Length: 368
Image (cartoon, rainbow, N blue to C red; front, side, top):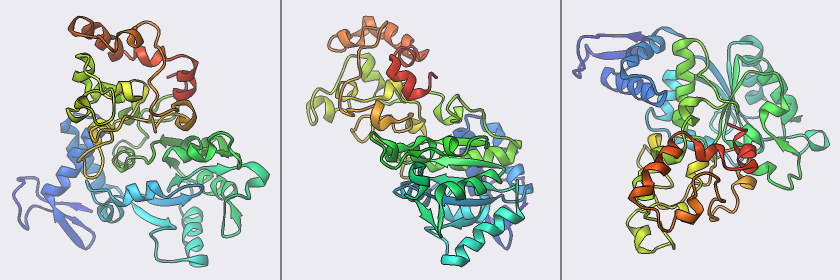
């Protein structure tokens, strides 16, 4: 990739970025780099550093594995808009294997995978979607005559690092929900000792996948991770902190019933079971579908889909959060007003509610 003309952002042949045999608008390229800086929680001035890294470094080889999954994360990837999936595949990475979207099939497809594993050992990025079953030798998920566990050990074990996309590959997801008949687990548990990043969610947000890879290309290492191997730029704050309904929470304006006046007015969904105060995800800032909306904006409470084993620990999804010691939310939700808003907000801003959520919280967030 050759980076051309730093003088202006004017459209024209002199302000284009050449990528192989094709060119893209410098304006669009810099918009992408600026967007990546924002997702990574970096100052806008880092856009130039990101641009230079993408310009000079070879696109990394990437192989995408699918195991016990619903393909929701692949669907999320295909709906990428900033950049589009074609821009990601053609400009940012070299996607050499993905069962769902690749042209080859059968033995040819498996050859594509093994060529990367053998020829790019220690250099390629493995992306895993879906849980890995361990029960009965892993027979509940087989591809090309091999178990998911066997494939993951070889592919992830020889990768520079692995990105686990979606809650299933991070810690088993819905496949591991009680009673977990196939013994499904996340990649980190199935293949201990590998270097990996968890990008949970049901599904994950593709902006976070792209940003993780861009961070690696720019700085030569992975972003800072929390105790659950999630990058802080995507999971360092609670949904509640950046929620556009937060002001209604502070004002004591809660939806009491689906479709009531408060619901129509966009009031806080805490009373309807929203898990935003204890869920760590950047949904409010990156959003979905071209950054047009996200579940809470659409009127549905957060179900903590990026939290450890949310299908069990955050259930019932429409049940109000249990009493949180220290802040009296349970007793004041019906009458919280301006006088209590400041204290409540201050407590939440230091994640006090997240840390006091009880043993259930420790299981959900790994004691974060």
